[in-house]
Length: 193
Length: 171
Image (cartoon, rainbow over all chains, first blue to last red; front, side):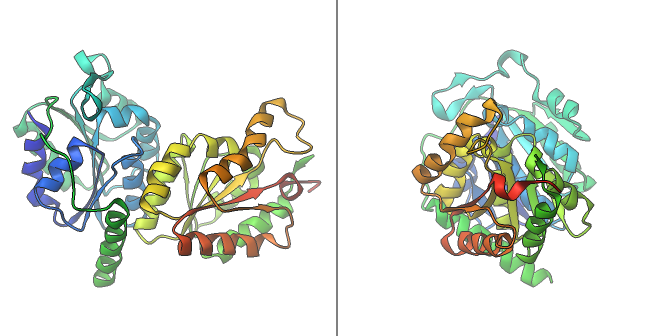
């Protein structure tokens, strides 16, 4: 299974959610499907995408928050799983694409390569109530559908191939992305209230 | 010397008067009364993190969500958060209002706090982060309000260093 296939399959369902991605391939694959104002790409600060998602989710309990994360980033901030589990925002879906590789920075093996480190087990051990470990597109879509339905904190660890796009680049300056994401949320809240 | 309960109350009043209802923190001795007050306050959402760098991400998320917030941490936690501050807050122009317990300055009896205390101000200057020292309980409310306002207008991290004069005392 490729991460790009998972993101493509998820893309039509992201319209009504707020989405934060990690840097590199994951961000590019989402952007290439068509940028939307509800997407924020964290192109650095590895590990903090899930923390941003937690801050948004706790602040706006009526919005669905989806984090598209990776094994390398989660390994840099393992404490995030425990913090997320402790506060358990019902509107947070944390998807971790595990390609066993630091793909965007040279393709070096991560600690999850060969099953040495099991991120789903770590998430369960951290206290996340719903953790799915998937390795086919069918399983991924089923786990995502369940997570969308259940309205409780969910983590999905998706084993994917270590492949990414053949190009990088966005017509979106980094602060511009932050300003537009904040504005989109602000205007959406005005419509909601 | 013990942590000043009265001055901690003044700091907490300042946080509330600034309109803050969302605080991200990692417990530390000087902050103990502040965190207790936040925990006991039904109006306040207190998020305790495992490591301070997480708090930078959570604060950014709260900012995106339009939720007035600030961070409480020790200066060693600030030092441990620098990549988050640089590669999220500064890079994306995300405002942060940080109240930092400034351990390890004049009068510090504990050797383990000294190096972090000595480098805190030079690191803040090196990062270009506006900062001020908070020493006087009668001024702390105004200082918190001003730090919060400036972080929002400048779209920058802003730090208020909580000193021994403010945080320690008999009561």
